[in-house]
Image (cartoon, rainbow, N blue to C red; front, top):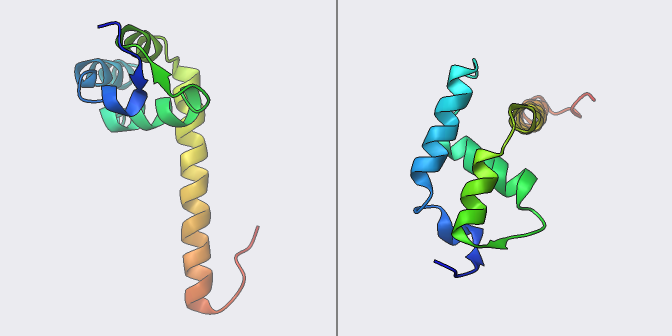
Length: 99
């Protein structure tokens, strides 16, 4: 397994690792953590500049994901989703979203 591939191609192979990490976060109190959340966090925060890796590097990156990095990711995602909902509501009411 010395192949270097885009990280997207490793997702199925590392699914047990993603589930393990999500389980770890749930044990730490992040009850809504899912394997998909961990995957998206890795793509957007960790692998955004280096998208080609070996399998062992991808697994190592997931196991080294800290709860601070994960919390940062879910916080940003929550703010972005809130802004989207505010924009949709403003469009329904015919006004500009407040910032």
